[in-house]
Length: 145
Image 1 (cartoon, helix red, strand yellow):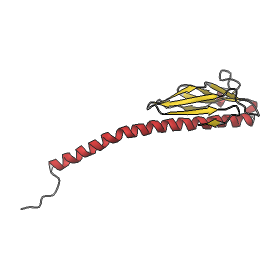
Image 2 (tube, rainbow, N blue to C red; image 1 turned 30 degrees about the vertical axis):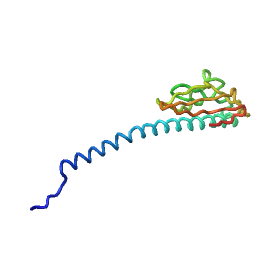
Image 3 (cartoon, helix red, strand yellow; image 1 turned 180 degrees about the vertical axis):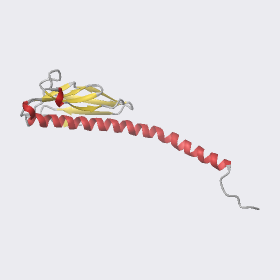
Image 4 (tube, one colour; image 1 turned 45 degrees about the horizontal axis):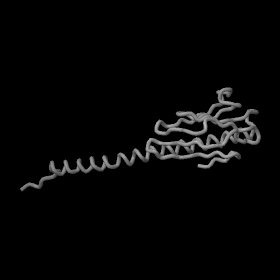
């Protein structure tokens, strides 16, 4: 009797079935992880933009106030008294992933030298998996998230 080398059809089909089941079970976990990661990246990016805007205002960068505009798909750090009257050449944008929605404050300006915010409140980021992150901006310009 010859020694047969290789796999039988049953062994091959069983291996493919096991790989398929593992892939099917891990895909939802990966999707959930990716959505939470999008949410965390958007949150940290906005916190950094708020702090940068405060720093620019405190340093009287460009002899102007600085602000942040929160929109559905993009967050904009801008130079000027309002978003409408800003100097667009200084805009810094942060793209918000499609899996994240933004609600709450729409615009905040920081005063020259003191960096005091024009308004206080919260900005809420919600992912498609219903995870949320809330940023709170207080009267001193401190961001809590």
